[in-house]
Length: 237
Ligand code: ADP
Image 1 (cartoon, rainbow, N blue to C red):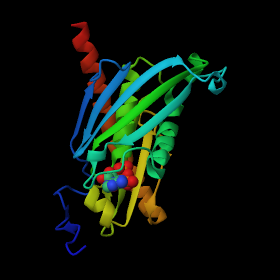
Image 2 (cartoon, rainbow, N blue to C red; image 1 turned 135 degrees about the horizontal axis):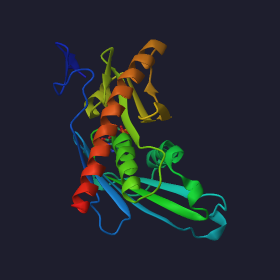
Image 3 (tube, rainbow, N blue to C red; image 1 turned 90 degrees about the vertical axis):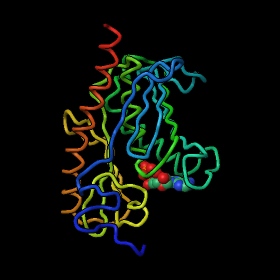
Image 4 (cartoon, protein in one colour; image 1 turned 135 degrees about the vertical axis):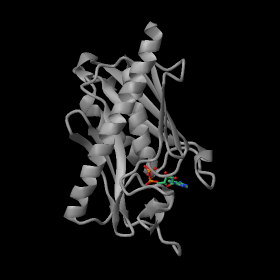
């Protein structure tokens, strides 16, 4: 790219290196789902719907000891610049798998043998960071569905752009930057449940990135909690 991605200590959209894009969370936006959440991260707009625990068919997929978790990440055809071909592809299958694994450690599946908990994440608009937005939404939707959890999972990406470690890359930074590292964690206990990396960073850079991601996840966790508390305190009133 001709233009520098960093100028006078600021990024292309004016953010500081350790600044996230604005976040908006709405809980319980779908009436047919057991739990749901709308999550905005800058120009990313995603919705998560949770169904279950419900009986799993076919029965040979059932686990006699626990619920199984199914996660489907899907991008709407209109969520990207050029129309995306509908249906699953390698990327969405990979994102579905890692997102499920990011959430599984907090879900008390042992309470619901032979059932399934189905999580659907629909990306309505994308600007890099959709998998982290999806995980944040899904985590809140699971809580909204009343599913017992050990904690909430929060997620954000860090990466390297023009040699600097930055938080929450947007699409331009993701496309023209040096590295992108999405992280999901249980902020309450500092437990990482997902970490991926595209590009190259040194050990020191990864450590610095993780520290920045950890602080950001703590902030996201507070926002997720507040969104849930405000929905349920309104209902009680
Ligand atoms: P994430 O959205 O989690 O950052 P990627 O790094 O794979 O995942 O994608 C970065 C961004 O690239 C997406 O948010 C989206 O804006 C864009 N993108 C991904 N897949 C496509 C596609 N098939 N067509 C156009 N843009 C895409």
